[in-house]
Image 1: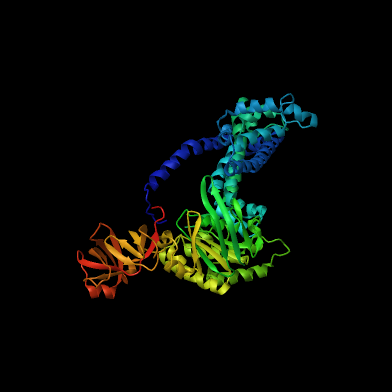
Image 2: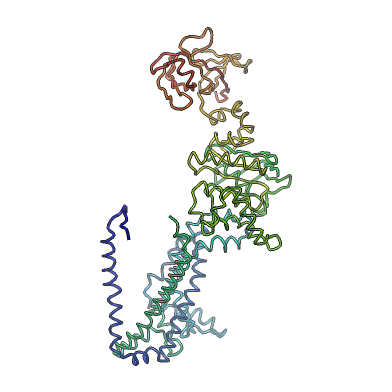
Length: 276
Length: 356
């Protein structure tokens, strides 16, 4: 690789700093999880990570996270659209509200959601007669994960929407495109990479979420028990090695999923980045 | 297709962008909307395209009222100043867009689309760029692709918003000649917006001069340049020397010098503005019989290019006169800076100062 002249020097220094920083904060703690896991033999490890109760929890965690991220992709896009395209009183307040799930302690969010969606809560008491139970079911898990993932999609899509040239939409209209065609063929391809980023962030955040979920989930084994809770339970029972074993499996799956999303992003972004 | 614009008004808040504008554009003409920035010319173009709705007034295409028609039903091709190409699509797909979004019944087959797009890309001489993406093209190439894209839907009217505004001087000149040739080939009614008088005078069949939301003058380039109907048009089209003067029975008094003019014979002692183009100023070393001349001193000489520009300081007041001489005439005179000369305004145009 040829050394490139750059306006701002310091490639070596900044890369070195980045690696050190990443090692201290991310790599070393994570590798500790792997090392701890090696205390188990492979058979023990396999038995722990494929226990039926653990398998059920993977399904719930990744399934609910995926659904929550998809819901956020749709409604986050809508929220970003409304915030960028329209002017209305109270817009600033709504804009600020979007960030609230970032700031709120997740336990508070969990308790609040449980109170509202429980059978005797404001919304829960209205849903229950229709046979829809939210609190203490997988549906409750999805709602909690949707809550904490909302800001990611809004905040990644918003700036891209703001940068979108109104002229390209006018050009599409003058060429005879109707509104739906203008959206699907012009606007959506432009915001798709950002939407994918927001989706990936919301998804990753949901997989790791613990605090808000445990209150509303009710943590019924095989039904509404998420993987992070299983890890905590094992820790509380001093089964450190099996706790890290489950953690390692989560880590690997998460990494592979995020890697795949990144690949998809690179692929859909290839024209834009090929430029100059 | 002819366009008739009737009494268009458009306000943005308290700002009046267009104030009772009416204009007829005959079929097949290439018309320039010329004016300083903020004069309303782009707003007028966008109203014709349907991208903006007028507060009052109407637009007729070929005699039919099109004021309420949607952009996509107006059959206009619009070329944007900053091209507005779809950056995630190849050049080919950009040009094909207008054909691909048609409803199934009228959409051409894929083979037909391919043929049409390549035909258009050949027309704009960029067939070899079909697989590139817009950000990989130069400004001039992008502009031509934008034009090909607009032509793909076979519009009845072509509208161009400052089509060469963002290009450098050389590409601009090439491209505007090319646009003229293209128009001569296709004969599609075209309107383009520009703030560059040279561009408008060179390319257009007719020039519409707009100022502060009103049309000042409409005419052929020759007409508006030789016979400006208002001081604004005079000043906007090319360089000009402006003098405060008094008109009295067909004679304009500029300082101590009286110039006979062929108008305003009945006017009695009225304040007026007199205009002379720099190339209508003659410079002599001696007094020329009874020709009305100003005494002046050469204060600056700019001798690069085919024309020599002189700055002359009038002796009777501090005002500067700008003159343009040919190199031949300049060498004949052998002028140097600081020299005393006599200046004769060959062609004076006077506008009465109504405010006075």
